[in-house]
Image (cartoon, rainbow, N blue to C red; front, side):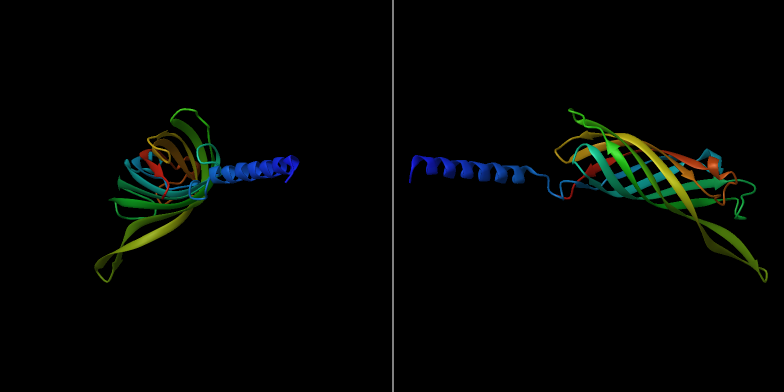
Length: 205
């Protein structure tokens, strides 16, 4: 072969090597799929409810693994106790109330050069409120489980401190607005819940 042909072959091999290296450096789908989990304090003063607990689990897809826009599908379990002479929707003056929130939304994560990455998120979805009511029939009393579906909006802001390449400790503050009256209040625009949670987020692999 002529020297010119060797140069062309070397150039083509160099391009193929660079392309293969770039492909191996691309993020895999599993690198962008995270699973946040957290538990925290819940305060719902406008709902005539005592302070409670919130547990949240989610699946999150990131367009880039550590910065930029992301999508999150969440399940939040909220539980409160109440004690009041009269509660709308139930004749039990002392008991527990549960909310099961199924939320979907979009967020943005800042690209910090250090281990701490701040983020913000907005989500929408239905919340299934579960509570009890006493029913009287023929001189007997029964406890009946009742439920009501309430649309909610959740705003969340927090930060992640990475303890590994794909694992981080999370701390966030959220507020959940009820867009419809719950059994425990009338002014639904003021019926919200403030949460402070700590947790962990990581990939499966």
